[in-house]
Image 1 (cartoon, rainbow, N blue to C red):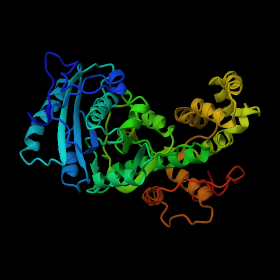
Image 2 (image 1 turned 30 degrees about the vertical axis):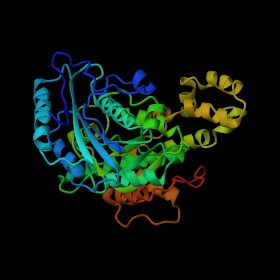
Image 3 (image 1 turned 90 degrees about the horizontal axis):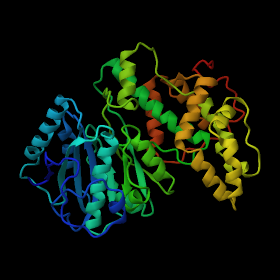
Image 4 (image 1 turned 45 degrees about the vertical axis):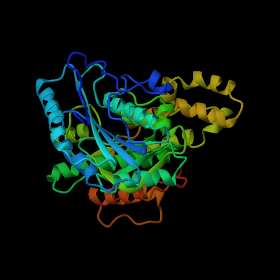
Length: 455
């Protein structure tokens, strides 16, 4: 069946290889399976979109948004990875099989050589690892092989989800972005969850969660994180050579995008694509314990009057530690208070002497310090401070405080509702400008929290 790489029911753990490839060190060491798509890639292949698909009711709407969009200048491909666990519920197995069967009908005879669609059928993945991380890895490794076959290590590998819609200019915008940023190893892509038509509480929860994500990003910048980017798996793209350089995608069943992108950001030079927008689904999901679907499910199942997020003062507490890390090469790190407790529990006092002893320059020390105090540790520190120092606050209060700290001379939106703050934050993110805060170390907490000026 053209365009479909089917799994042999008798041998689902090691799919059959397609034509032999020239040696690629990454594929030799890191790829879990040999390449599976038998059709040779077009000579001018420069962009591959990878879409994991598990128990999806309508992945073809996502494929349609690509098929009916504006073509990129060169050849592009789309790889749909239909994946399931060997221990999957029979209903999931049946729905995945239906997707595989329906794909051939959807593909039809109207083929465009400039945009080919392929399906990888992976029904029996090990239960221990089956999930979105492994599915992304299988598809992205296949994309590496396709680009390797045409000798294009700088080709682009983009990620969507099977419930995400893209704008008509998505492919063209990706190609143009990397053309304008030839040294960029990868980029994040502007995203906005669709809110129109949702029931009132569902809409409030979705808008609040997205506002929480945008407050988190601003908080990272306030804390001094050098990589305050969003980490949304359906809104990212990477050059093949950069993907290989960071060891490829991980197999995490949740949070795979965060961990992969943080490794990519550390390479330096990552950019933001804001000329187009992807629209992740605003739906409930219990597949993973955290993320959009899980947070929305908890919100809809509860009765809280408002959605909460981390108090911005948690991020401000980290600023002296992270904004100027070179000082800790010679100065003692403050270990008082809740943040000090966190640093001691994480072993920093014992690690610092080694960091200093093996360092010949401030730049090397900063690199090592940030390798230790990485993105995950920032999240853990903020969570610790939320438990011990500054409890969570309504998400609109956090957005208002961050906005006032960042733009002390700009007025608040006239409407103080979640939607108004979300649109303000979306507009700021679309500008793709570096997030900069003035010195807020002495900012008076009064007048910043709620609209009335009281936390």
